[in-house]
Length: 142
Image (cartoon, rainbow, N blue to C red; front, side, top):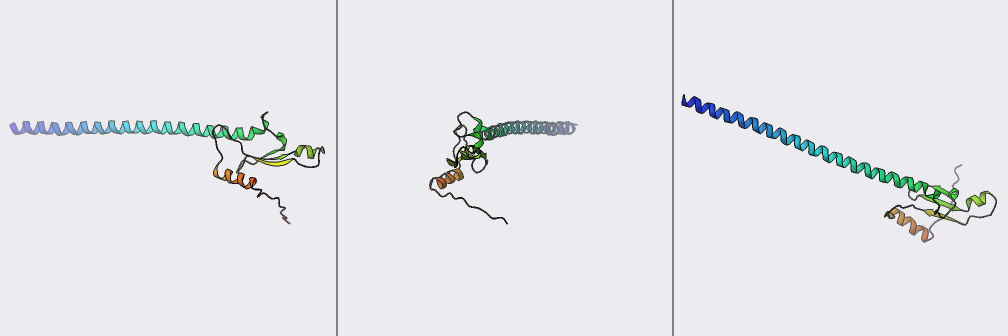
């Protein structure tokens, strides 16, 4: 009878440990899943905020000629988007209206907001223009 009592106590301990261990694993899994969900939510919120910021920047770029401090006639500006934002044919509207015979200049513009800086390709384009390595060619497609 003593051996049956010992067996019963041992059996009870094994079952109890397994039940507690299973419960601990389930709680651990639940906490890990909650942490992953919170992390994913935070990551999604950050990505959405970044996306909104980029979108606001792109809208600002396209609307730049409509600002009162834009240094050229808005109708003279043509949006490129990439690699630079605008090419301005300064005086184009005056030439079109017959008020003058020639353009004042052609200007490449990149619009920046906040602390944004020129990208590597934008810097290279700027140097190319400053060094006078800009030409006009006619392509015959016939």
